[in-house]
Image (cartoon, rainbow, N blue to C red; front, side, top):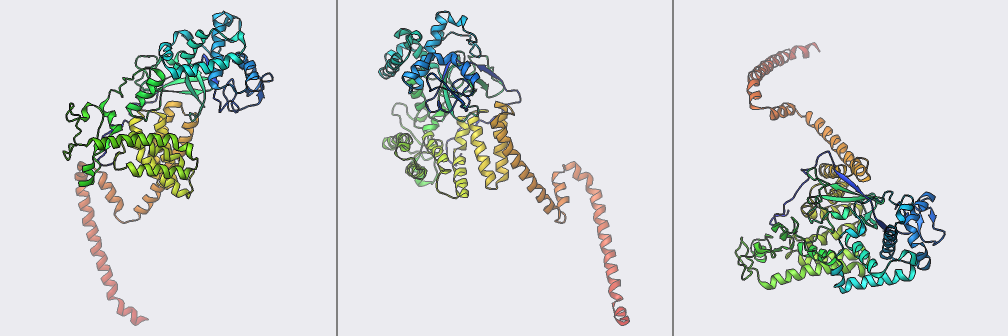
Length: 544
């Protein structure tokens, strides 16, 4: 962390070993996103399209075999898509859930071949959490449901529908428990899936597991060896993104999942550094960015008056300054949310974000999550901006380095997001000729990727390729350096002496003394020879 910044605990990956633990889960139902339904197979989710359903002319498949297998789910939505080709992912997903649940309820599942192939679950769909009462009291949530319900009633065949209350019950369970399905490379979301057994695991803002996807199969992976992957009481993954501060996270969880989080991180006072501010007096009088908490009981010198006092300069933060800092955080969030809607030009977006950085760099420290999210938002834009390749690398590496302590704090243990950050830093360092730094980051990135996904996964192979490249460059430089150094007289002996223990040095003293005396004797002999040669010089000249 920068000097004067908050002491965020930077957890490494010291708990990982060589025995990753994982568990596979299969979906009750799933559906491609609106943005991927044209480019991915509706059955296996592969990014390959070779067939289109002859009946609805909407659903895509990678092969005849997949089209046949995919009819197990597609039959519920096929005629509806023919009537309304633009059914959203929410509507297609609910149609599939209702249709499958109706088949199970009516006992049709026993007569349909492969009904449970790669779809096994220990629980039934009506056994999972639902929060129906909370959703009925949520005007916005009910408006969403009624729009979805009206659309599917108009489009869907009655034989695949159920009464409105049952559909609402299923909608609630889907809305609360569904998961994002990423592509195999863990790089982008392509679909939604309802995994009845995976959703048994609770959320944590400091997860010790993550899940990844390979087609429709979701795999829960431990982030270190101490995780008991079968224990739903102690194993947790996250439902939300991790960089936001405690206030943001609680709002997201309450708004969508209707619960207040009291995980290890949310109850940790250290997390209050993520909304910290810079002491204005220390900045002016000492030119240091002393960081102060403004949230949590530990932030107040006097809980009754809620006075925030700097323990370095003993000054009390004025309320107006605290309000200005809070307004700055709100403005940053607003800028991040609205700026991409104003312009898509990367150079213009960088200017907007840089303007916000300049405005708040003396109010918000690097430990502040809003400030770090603003910096992180600039990273992908740099590669699209009008700069030379070297300028892009330097700027991007600088932004990555600024975020590194924050990334290490937020993503604990062998988290792939941390590995991806280090991988990008390694790539940039390698391109800029910083071999030692490149090797350090790429080794750590590869260690995480290989632990999580295995050596044959794309991400593990990719990081290994760059790591090997960095290591070979480093070894070549080291070999060249050693060759140059060895040509300098006395360096080899000096290096050997540096690595010796005191006992070894003492034992070699007699031999060293003898060598010195021998060298002195040889020097005297050489002088004598040189003198004799000079004495003969006049005679040699005369002979000539």
